[in-house]
Length: 276
Image (cartoon, rainbow, N blue to C red; front, side, top):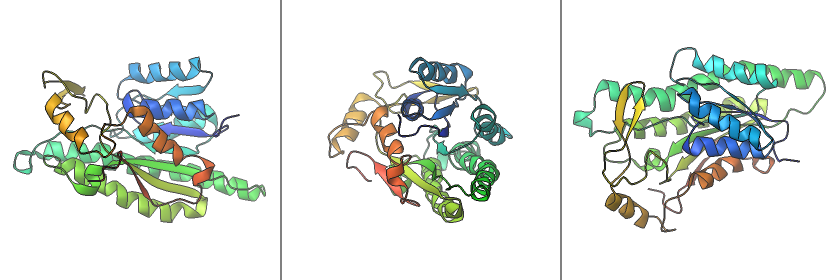
């Protein structure tokens, strides 16, 4: 018996890194998971890992910021597993510049993926959650506590040089979280944020050459930090090290289990003691 037996979850950006570990953790506790990634390959690999461990998963590849994606993402959960209980808005990347060099394209791209996409996914989910709540009430059944976990960053709580776009988007997630917590309390839905500190992923890990890149729909974006910079960042963390994707997933899991059913509208910082 898993803690999340019978639950249906959607996790954006879950083909790699933290999102993958979130999907694997939820599935290991019994949830059926809709896995998303920009590319189909990583999403399919995560689904295969879930199924190999005896869990249930299905992929829904695509850009979370694309028109129509949110409706397709939510509908995949309904069509594949018959409902929706957990929403984790995790997808994202960084595209940094100091403000005088930041283009409108950079600004809009980061706000689109980190703030507009979660908004659209939650908007698409509302009719489904409202209908499920109404159905339970009409049947005289208790309304289960559903969960939304939006992913933020300590950059959203304290800012960071070169990340005006990312900081603004992640700060915006806090406002979105607090508002939806108030709007959806009547559906017995808790809505919270997890703000990550330094976590070892392909976006943050030190690169010996300093020229690691990712491809976002044809854009080659530089990621990672040089080893000295990465070591300096770790020294600022009271626990003395960066976190792992598994540890990051654990923080999200805490807000998905029944023990957190009376916690809503909050931001949990998962940063090893570093709060920015």
